[in-house]
Figure 1: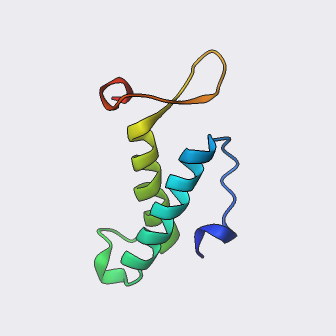
Figure 2: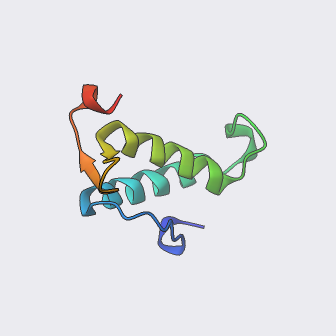
Length: 77
C-alpha cells in the first residue's frame, strides 16, 4: 500500500509530510520483495521505518507544544 493509502495520524509540517511520502513510496518500491528486507517485517513496516527515520533527521517534536519543528541536523540527534 503506497503512501496515498496510508494515514499516519501525526501532524507534521507540509515539508516533512512531503519528505515522508516521497521516501515511503521509494522504500515501498525498493523493499517489494521479501529477500530485500532484513527481517520478517511487512513491506509497509519497512517503508514506514525508512521514511520516519529520515523525517527524524530533520524534524523534532517540541516537548511543550507538541509541534514538529525543522532543526539543524546536529540539533535533532
